[in-house]
Length: 172
Image 1 (cartoon, rainbow, N blue to C red):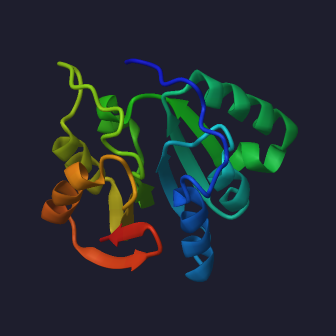
Image 2 (cartoon, one colour; image 1 turned 90 degrees about the horizontal axis):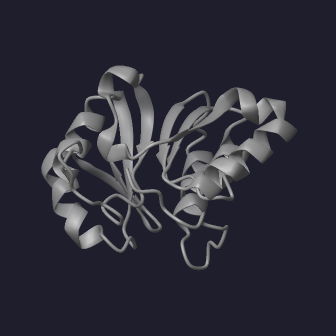
């Protein structure tokens, strides 16, 4: 597992994926959802904005993002209760350790993918996570990702395109 440096700071002008996800959640009045969010950013905006009314497991490969998470949750007990961040490569997740989710975000899938003997291929990862979606759940992808052209055919072959919301493709 190769750490990613540095942590991503909040800059929705460059990457609006998290902002659009927050807006999508609010526009659909989604509350009390279990969410797997890959790529927390050092800003942890999804956890801050949505963690009061949802249960969120974030994934990061950035030590900086783990440090900023530690600072955040030691200052806010409510967020600490509903928002957890795991330092892990999504491509090495053990599905037996994961619960089922209502929503899974894979905004930056494939951007820092380095195949190894221990990791899932991109297609295997999407398939494994599809198995962790609750019935009626959603998987979201970011259409402006640097790897979108590579991962879009994978999403399209495994899932059904439900809607497009700004820069996000929503799958069921």
